[in-house]
Image (cartoon, rainbow, N blue to C red; front, side, top):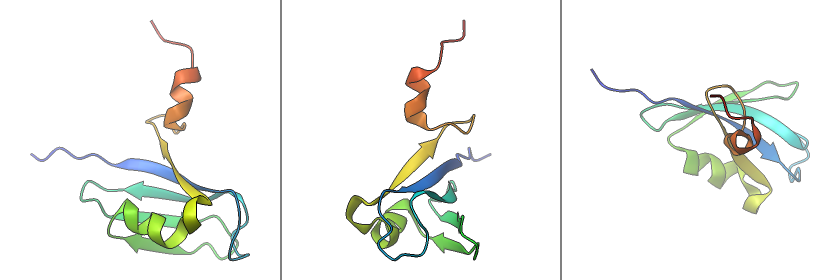
Length: 89
């Protein structure tokens, strides 16, 4: 059986270049084991899109670093936040 590894992420935007999605957390996404990604925009339009890989998302929506991918851990927290959580014994 093939091992699967799905990862979840958010798109966090510091500047809204297009004037459409705003700033802060603007989309939720999932990267499938195949590398394909699905995202849904957290706007009133609520659109969905598929991309062949995470680099494509960054290329289309990154706007030169104005939008970044925030990877989530299995608890739905940003991976960077794990360092700030108390350790479980």
